[in-house]
Image 1: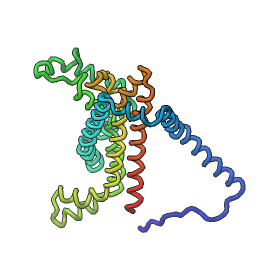
Image 2: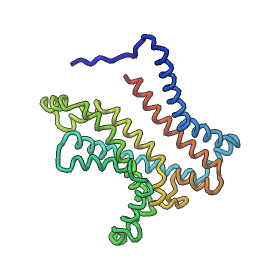
Image 3: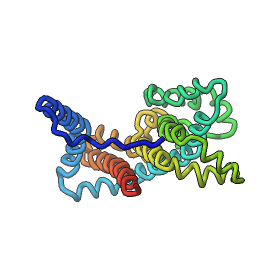
Image 4: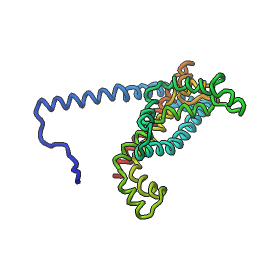
Length: 279
């Protein structure tokens, strides 16, 4: 069956429909401007209020560099874990039918419904000083709460759905015919995935990684509760922004927030540009 792309109609619209179209376009522009452009504009104005030198001075502080380095490390580890396990999860949910599949599929969206602060508190109940696993952790001299491992677990939880939800519709649309053909020609499972499946789902894979990375960069509530925001030890970039605002270090807070926001925006826009260019 051949699919035909439908191009927008070139026929002139009736006067009433022209105003409806303009109204809808205007509403969308206002909506996006209020939620995205206005905050970014305010960040830029606040960051550059004292000129360029205070921005470099604030961002070059050792604690700030440490916070950004910690954020980058947690985000990269999160992306690596979800690139592997998120792909497997999506594959299992699409390709296999088993008892509890619908429940598992619903649980994937749990991080969307649960507040990050609650996530951090749940991790404290498990790994804190009086947590369920506290005796076992103490016996093995392992520290999770108020340490980097707990922050990584919190970030993994809040970013869980992105990779899976990007890959599931792509895998469903791809089907299994090409994979079966590759198996018939003698390809093993890894060869089939690498040469047949992955090229077909690559943009879902890339978008999933991008959204996961961007979300991990901006995580705040969960890592604050489980990590404690100890300056120089468990402070991430977002926690530094919170502390800087609390200490009236507005230039540092504006500058760090601007770096995080622009980096995430540029990352997502670059992936979108790359995809359009590759078509």
